[in-house]
Length: 277
Image (cartoon, rainbow, N blue to C red; front, top):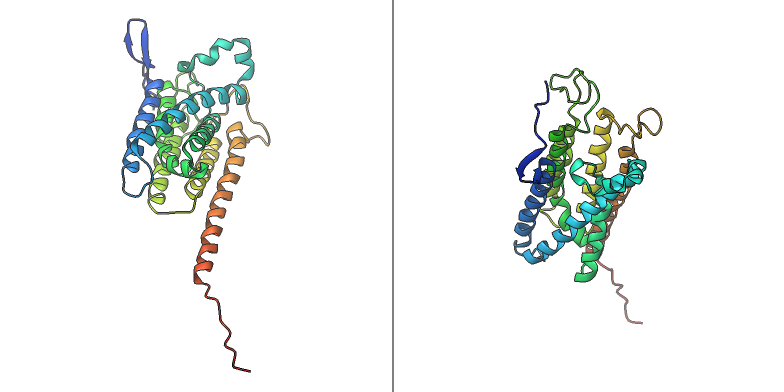
């Protein structure tokens, strides 16, 4: 299959251009905002819709600044040092999930500190709202015809403009389905029940790290970096390793806390009956 040509500019009004890549980010934020307000309005949530408005504003800033600076630092620093103005040209693409994650964590910390909430309480609430943003972001990559996969003969392989005449894995769609749709379903149903603080955040971290690490095997690494080691390790996989470890730690921590609480509830102290002396 040939990737159909899609003009990266969705709408032009004079000199103003609205690009599909930017619209995908707006769609992700909008859906996260709607779902977040719906969750906050549920009885016993401990959140209010205005809380969601303020939190998502912080998250948007964190994603954009962190995602862009993360890409600059992790993936293509020499190019941006030679042309610093390229950093602000976000419409040309170049966003790092791991950099965006660091920006989001900073937003969580700020919001938690100013609202008297715990960091994990904030991250657990917002974690199920992130995958749909990842879905739209990967669809933006697909529309731009960037971040394609390796050459393949699978029936759904595609020929991407600028990637040569051979068909390739549509790795953007793989990530959209796994990091976006599948991870969203897992987190949404998992978070519907009460869990110890950090459990939902841990599942998100583990799920994303596993899915991203797997797709990297069929995705072409960034040309300026190539493989970092062993002929297969990519920067994306390297950055997923600490995320996986943190996620596993959070899950194990929540499980052990639940077990300890269960033991405390089941423990009934024995009293000694002594006869009169």
